[in-house]
Image (cartoon, rainbow, N blue to C red):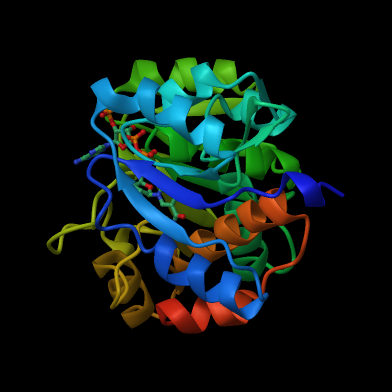
Amino acid sequence: MRAPAYPSRLVILGHPVAQSRSPIFQNAALEYAGLTQRYTALDVAPDALAETLRVLATEHAGGNVTMPHKQAVFLAAHRTSALAARVGSMNTFWHEDGELVGHNTDVAGVLATVRALCPTGVRDAQCTVLGAGGAAAAVFVALDELGCRNIRVCARTASRAELLAERVRVNIKVFDTVEAAVQGSAIVINATPIGMRGNEVPIAPARLSPNAVVFDLVYRPDTTPWVRQARLQGLRAEDGLRMLIEQGAEAFRSWFNTEPSTDIMRRAIGAHAVT
Ligand code: NAP
């Protein structure tokens, strides 16, 4: 129990950060739990990050980190969880005895979504991941934790995929084209920003296996073009909303050592059903 060390307030550090929906659902969960702390977005330019971290330490604040600060805050942390160390990035922080402590809660978000989409598990499934950035690292580790032994990746910069696979110590086969990578895959996961804006999709759902499951890490209020197209084709598909809420719930547990209401979080942000 870390009750005396609860964060005095919570922030999300980013640049830009106004688009973040974390304040919406975290404040709803804080209020529901009867906690007085509030969660705010803090737009911090890279050259102001060190001073901001110093002030947050004196305030005993906690929070989340998003682009472009994930790597810098990871390097600034005195300690991280074993999971954050393996993924090589952290998105959640707090202070203990004046020290900056970090954790990666994206893995929990991926685990929850893959479990919901594939209730019988992915141990024997062929899984393809598109992209090789920070979110893909969390996906690789989550798939590995779920026992998946057949992981494929296709990334715009192939060398980044090779390096990432080595760093997270997961056996991953790298493919040159998305079409080749998704061939025969039971689950296809988009960990690129494709679909955040406009109508572009990572790959046409018609090119996937007839029973493939689609997981798009991207989230948009009215779901993503890829998820919409996949569902129209009768595929089981989910966007990044569940992951967003579940990573937030795991962060809440880290800060307060207590269970938040994911229902309240979901209601605050607006839910999308799995179809
Ligand atoms: P990142 O570190 O910048 O990595 C992005 C990856 O996608 C890289 O491999 C990059 O290739 C590739 N990429 C970028 N633009 C592309 C394009 N137009 N075509 C093909 N590949 C492209 O980003 P990240 O942090 O991993 O985030 C990836 C996505 O996941 C974002 O959309 C983010 O919103 C989403 N995400 C969602 C959640 C959630 O809770 N739902 C959590 C984390 C992230 P290069 O190496 O060549 O640049």
